[in-house]
Amino acid sequence: MPRKKISTKTIETNFNHHLKYKICVSGAAETGCCAEGTQEKAEALGREIAKRGLVLVTGATTGTPYWAAKGAKSEGGIVIGLSPAASKVAHIKTYQLPIDYHDLIIYTGFNYAGRNLLLIRSSDAVITICGRIGTLNEFTIAFEDKKPIGVLEGTGGMADNLRGIVENAHRGPGRVVYSEDPSTLLDKVLEEIEDEEKKNGVKGRVL
Image (cartoon, rainbow, N blue to C red; front, side, top):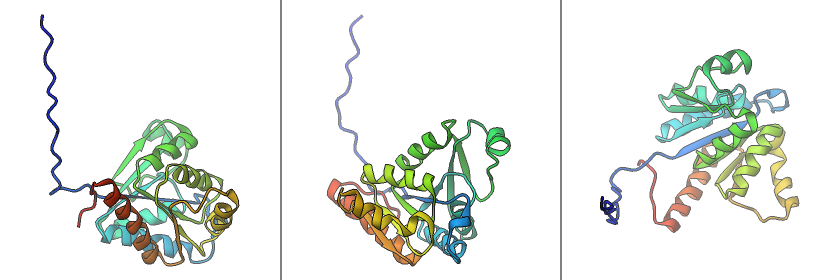
């Protein structure tokens, strides 16, 4: 039988419909290292993400990402979680992680390290709040991937050490922006995303 000819016609992109930006909030699941007022800042960031029509992505965990999810849902936002577990039952019983304040949880089955990679790769930008070693892992993945990264300083933990880590790493500043104010930080992160999309000739934000 003759081979079926494959069409080489270029697919036209409909730029009248834009994808929503996905903003990952990365931070401490155990919040003993976080500064006073971190919960309020995390919830405020979640609210800002929702108000601007963006999608919040988290590691489907406790602590600062959970607080951000709570804030986003209070404004009717969309929240997607990526779990380290392979199923809902393992998510709840084995990992003892929450399911509330999320619209969708994807069960990766790749434990924390694998989940972290998928979490960062599936997001347009990452915002770090407080954080411990897992947060640092997510930060370095995002840095290596040249993702826009926002650091909410004044929240304790890794967030208050990342300036020094970046300087001492001798790899340049990356695409990292800093602020102690959630709304200002989100402004800076969105500027980074939009600048990159202008360079690439693509558009992803719903205005």
